[in-house]
Amino acid sequence: MLKIGITGGIGAGKSTVCRVFYTLGIPIYDADSRAKRITTTHPQLRQEIIQEFGTESYLPTGELNREFLAKTVFNNPDKLQILNQLIHPRVRQDSQEWIAQKIGKYPYILKEAALLFESGSYQDLDKIITVSAPLELRIQRVLGRDKHRQKTDIEAIINKQMAQEEKEKRADFVIRNDGKSMIIPQVLELHHILLNV
Image 1 (cartoon, rainbow, N blue to C red):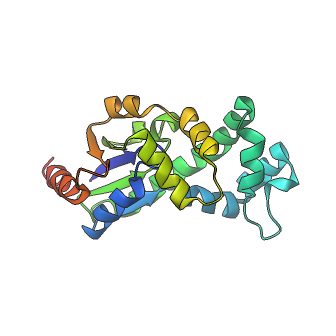
Image 2: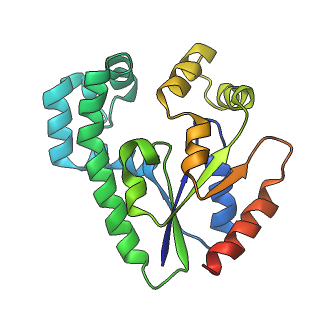
């Protein structure tokens, strides 16, 4: 069973592309949503985050206080690295366990992660797809989707992610989500290729 990574910068359209693959019967591991779940349900990780960042790291509901942590780490590379070192290995382990449950049941699976290259998890995968879109279009999509973000917030996130050109260079396949190229034919073509690898 092939393990395929799918990545792209914020607003590129990874989730949209993944929905098309999902309709074709391909299971999707969404690293972002799994990370959210793990930070809430993993007792040791929770303890380590509180120890490092304080009790404000969690809301009274028990969920991770993402807004507080984002403000804490966003302009502090050392703190961001510490947070990533706590979370990324747990997500990587979770994805490996998830993948192990799928072996023999599917021709391939997809792991969706914005920081696939940055986290090093691309090394566990057979092929990488990068979803690509023009910068201004990405910003407009995120502004439309995330009402709490300002344009400067989105630009700051983009500046912290690996450049789109570099992601494309490292990928085995690129899907253009530029508002002109149709996504479904690109996914169908890629699906056919992956079934025959």
